[in-house]
Image (cartoon, rainbow, N blue to C red; front, side, top):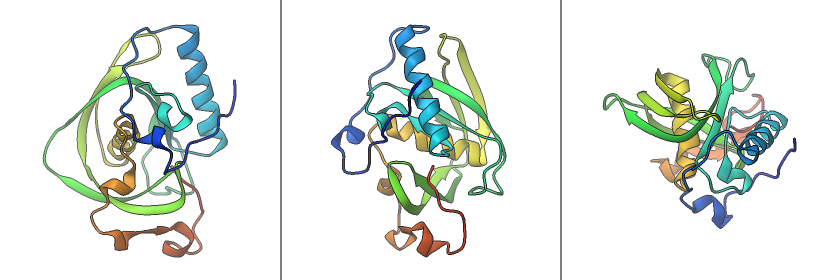
Length: 177
């Protein structure tokens, strides 16, 4: 459909709480999802949330097969998740480096739940219910944070672990989630 501009940190629309999707399998919802997919692919992202393209709805997408920026990451299935609900499965927290299409050129060390269950719906209203861990769990939490107006730098515990990708990781492929 279309590659949309991605809002950047500082845009107040990224700080708003998104509205639940009320109707599934509509032309408008399918058009939004197509635009999100085109945008995410064009920017080589691991995920994208509707608020990042200026749409205040609780819609995220994510997925990764192989990516030079995440050589050790396990594959994450291509998923559209609508009206998500996340439930941590235990108290184990793991730090990991994150980037974001809305915070280009930067990375930060972010604590996230290592294991969780997420539930929600696909574009047709079919229920999704998965238990995941590791990188998959991190990506889901990162994208769902956008629905509540949270950007990953807000979760960084020690700002010494936040900076420009090229400075923190010289010689590694540049890019953002």
